[in-house]
Amino acid sequence: MIVLKSEADIKKMRKAGRLAAQVLDMIEPHVKPGVSTLELDELCADYIRKHGAVAAPLNYRGFPKSICTSINEVVCHGIPSPKVRLKDGDIVNVDITTIVDGYHGDTSRTFIVGDGATPTARRLVACARDCLNLGIKAVRIGARVGDIGAAIQAHAEAQGFSVVREFVGHGIGRGFHEDPQIPHFGQGGRGARIEPGMCFTIEPMINEGHWKTKLLSDGWTAVTIDHQLSAQFEHTLAVLPSGEVEIMTLP
Picture (tube, rainbow, N blue to C red):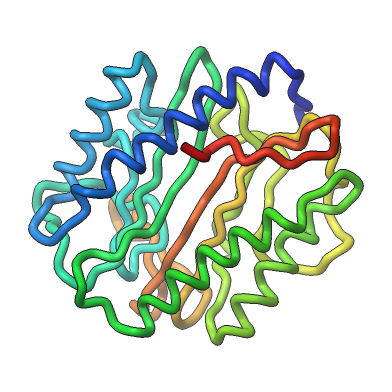
């Protein structure tokens, strides 16, 4: 069931979304060669805590850390570790979800580490960012959820990349994951109709090679099935009664 948010709900979600974006701004200078993903996690967790908020991933269904750090072939849900250090040329997605006054804000960015990334890696990261923006442009009152995925898939495949099917965007509010699901692929004109009060994430995961993923033995880390690169960007959106589509995870 899709829970339509009130003006009061959206006002609270803005605070959570803004803080999540600020965490990404804060951590960006620390995303550099030699830094461990655990260090990134600890910095983010401390920042969130000092701002009176909660890191939603921590202990969510057993997830052991406060953020997700997904490097190179890791599609999503990478677990921060003291053993994993960033290298020049890596790409890493940092996924942040904060809870403020009981409401969630969810956002992620893929960062390029150092100066050694390949042209393909840079093109993939740019494509993932563009896919998110095109998905957002497809959101309007009266449109269908399927219009979002159709726009994303068309652009990614035109660039020679693929769109992950196994993980999708989602409704959000008091719950971390709510209805509706937001696929990043498919046909336009299908799925739930977009209404005022809907709040959801768009978070396309774009792969260099095949779209399929596999889950590692830790039960969380998803990687590309062919070990090629994956990149992702994410925002939380609110559809306002005015017809405006507000990105709530801007700094």
